[in-house]
Length: 289
Image (cartoon, rainbow, N blue to C red; front, side, top):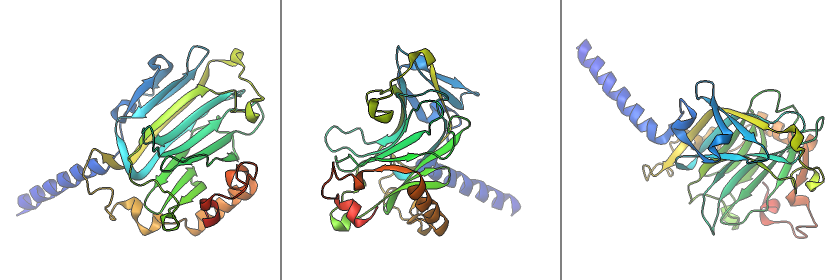
């Protein structure tokens, strides 16, 4: 009887493990879930291939992408940004549907700075091909001194951008008010390090100082938990997925306080209040983000 129960438990555990593989995976090494897409000579695997170093110099930037696309879930990475004078550089972590016309995209863009100035993170959201929804927040710590966790949570209810455990942006599903929300196209996970001194720092006034090159950013603890595409067709609509649970359908009280604190004390730009670009506020701004 004991042997029968043991065998049954092993079989059940194997089935659960197999199902879990299709819903999420935490790769043991970088190359388990990702591939280099731009300038492999500028991406170095370190720490037993569990972490990577991205390099930007006068010859090239670099980039990588997930091997699969995902429809809903949570994606996070720990990143240590370029130290010192990083003006004119952009370190990006984002999700993208990689479709030419009707693009969906969720962006973290870390904008380099002159030494001693705050690091700025810009977020942007493309839904059904429409973007131009930039918000900028000055980080309240030095993101080059240590690793910090940057997370995109995406479910049927909202999209939330987190810095560590602090939500810095929320985009609600307001489809009932005819506001587009990305929910049909799976998105890949991407990251790039590149030179953008025509706009990245103080609107392009601060140029990159190549004498400070190479510029180095570090990534580790890659975590993708979502519905892979291709994969089980019913996964994305499964309300039993943990990221669709009640806990994740809205910010909790602590998160809401942190969110208000960020917006009151650290937000430096919001497209919703930019009357030079939008004399009439976009619908999602009126509906609430």
